[in-house]
Image 1 (cartoon, helix red, strand yellow):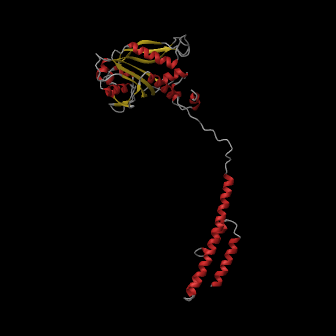
Image 2: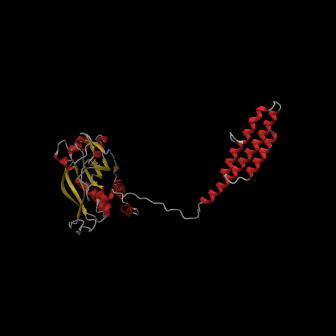
Image 3: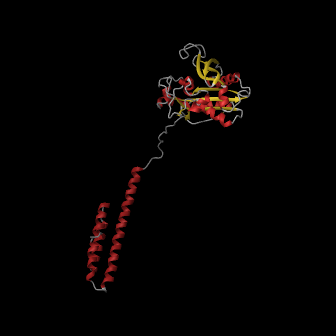
Length: 344
């Protein structure tokens, strides 16, 4: 049996020495070392050996197995190195080549306008206040002098979720929440940016969702002239130093008196053109003095304090500032439209 083991070792060394690939190496591993391999077949005959011969043959068998296993591992390592070298050669990257350009995004034009307006009012001493988009009927209407079944509610056709919850139709509820949180203290000087929702049909100038910024000031001896001066300062910073404003009487349930505010046309400077329908003016926002009833419901004495409020649509301001003719461009995510504002 010892001679058979030596012969097997010599044969395996010769066969493994000429192996050409991994598949052939695996075949030879199974042939010599597998459960049904040549070495196993020889060792099955050890039962017929005497007690003195078994240790000797066992030692020889272990040496033969060790030689074959070492040679198999050596060949496997050589094949692994060769494969790694081939992959490195095939997959190498020329780091001297220029990289692929990265697409650089930009701030959305609506956000650009919102940030610009916020900067203007922060520079005038205002702070930013925010509130929930899902509001109660009380904060959205009742606290703003719009009791249930009031006909003025028809001005803001709403998305109701329950009888008492709805998607807010303006950011005025944030003003009410701010006044309540102040517990009658003054001064109050905030702007309230955010998204609002109304059941409008989508067209070039309307959308079921849009953005507003509203402002609120409360203190002693606040007058309409303060409102006009504030809006004149804002419009000149927004549209240019030559901009003029015009106040027209209007109606809002939460202000008294109420005015619509126009600016000289950003296209023709007030001379009259197609954009302003030859009037020289463009309407941009609504405003007025805070209604005494609204002050009283929010914890302020209307005999002692007064205030003004205003509100504007961000899309309207952006359309005028950038000459956009369709509000839907802001929401369709068309890169051809958005890329025009990447360097503003």
